[in-house]
Image 1: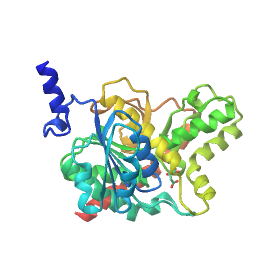
Image 2: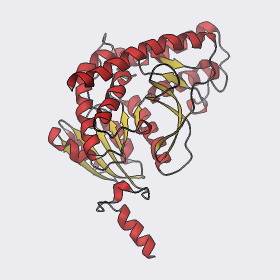
Image 3: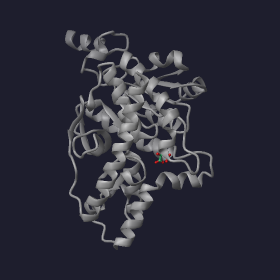
Length: 340
Ligand code: LMR
């Protein structure tokens, strides 16, 4: 009984020791950019997750209202809104998972890379706060351009001597979600029955859906496969066009980010996790950040499952994706070095 009580005390929100222990089963999660188009639905999904007991929402404006709104939901998590640069450290302090969605969205005709100047600085401030106040947290980056921002975040964490490559992730789950959906529609089966690795990065032709490994197998013409690949690679543009200049994917991105956090939390709880792709530090190709299927445990990445088998055209596509990724990675790393 004493042991049980001690364990509960150490796991309670009041304990100063809690974030150094692996005992807890209830998680503290922060959503940064919580009053934005992705942040709001993502926060709602987090609220519904009974493993999360402490949900912190942060944004530069409007977040108190979002937190008040969510605090009327009959779910067990406590929810608090924190606003502005002065509250970012409080928002991320001692978190298990911090999801960064803050930043500008693309307008029609823009590339994700064109968001780097603005979004890079926003993410840099958040990651600095994480380095100071929550160095053990899983850092989940949704903000675009993921291909450059994740290497930039790694550099910031390195400067603070708290970088752990097993705990830093760029979310590419939306590419997997899209692939499952489009293939499911084509095969006339539920997308939940489709398994396909989508590797590389999260922009245009760096997104590599490995159709040759699709389960169930995709018996379609080469032309049809190519057009499906293009649709997955240009999924972001498809939404921007449909929204007629009023933003990019928000609901599907929130769905995807929540799916990724779900797998991370399973790993943190010591449960067996399904494979999920994410953009992480990698030695699988010559690009030092690359998305491949991963499994998870309490330390973050349990295993990088590496490259799936590739056919001839996928090998070609990989070569060009790696070159593009190397440029984005350099952009991210240099941004931090120039600020030194
Ligand atoms: C997406 O893939 O929909 C997101 O990365 C948003 C965007 O800018 O396309």
